[in-house]
Image 1: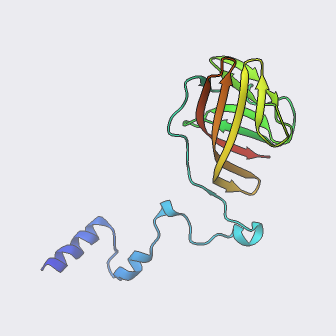
Image 2: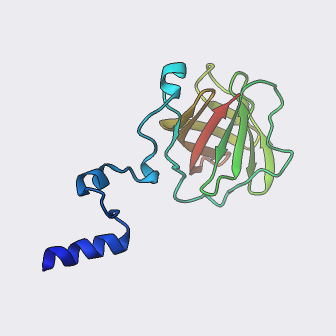
Image 3: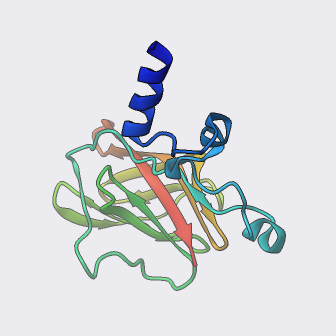
Length: 169
């Protein structure tokens, strides 16, 4: 009696179809987990993915860039650091970085500081450091990572924001 009640509930809930063995129903993959096969693996050597990770909180000192401000001055592959809602906070070119960031409503352009590839920058407003973390998305010519944006103003106060750093061609 209880077994037939359980089967009726499963049928009503759509978890198993009539005439469909329960073991086959358990092998059906939920769409959230993605496909079982990856045709790109053979051609590109990896499977594109995106975990959907975004920062949990935003730092109100850093304002999103306005349309038209999203590009730095040098051409080439570009990167964007975005906030929890996917709005661009920081824009720079990966080969010749000169980041652009809106701090307290003012647009500030930075220039590289230190050795190449250190992701440290300076402007009249203060120092900027960009630290990259783990990969959260990857595609053929695109990669996104967790990141930390640290701006130290002229008074020595550090302002930190968690960002998603997306770079591509």
